[in-house]
Length: 168
Image 1 (cartoon, rainbow, N blue to C red):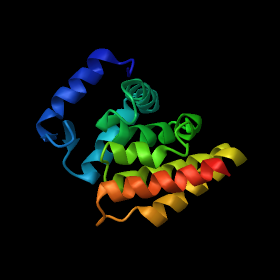
Image 2 (cartoon, rainbow, N blue to C red; image 1 turned 120 degrees about the horizontal axis):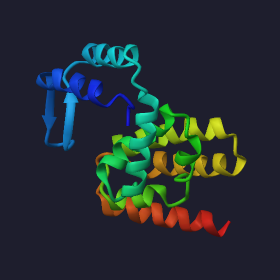
Image 3 (cartoon, rainbow, N blue to C red; image 1 turned 180 degrees about the horizontal axis):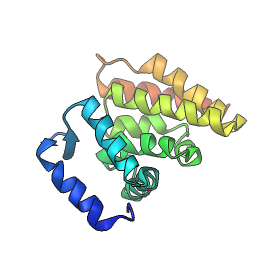
């Protein structure tokens, strides 16, 4: 993935003791932001192509299924945005985005994060059709997504709202 095989393996073995396993996220994380920046800079200085790695990981998550795979839902948009693969994000700018997200019980924070990245991507693509879809998704999010509400109420409200939009 990085095209530096043994050097990359050695580098990651050296930092293994500062990686913390996160059972919630089902993977490893680096403890501190400044340490993350240091590691990123070290990778960059050694010639590791992190953007290529991000794209490969993004494609792998894409193939896992965006809505069905928690890691994909939580990370794929960020990876594709960093790699300027805006079209891959805009593919999900559809009227049923919130219904599919809610049916998998993603939190308001997670949904809003992806909608924010979707907005930035739609602006980069400059597609009028996608902009309209994003605007409707965002409006539905503002009107029907309250952290304190029951998911069944949210889904019911979104279904009626989006069915009305589709008829227009």
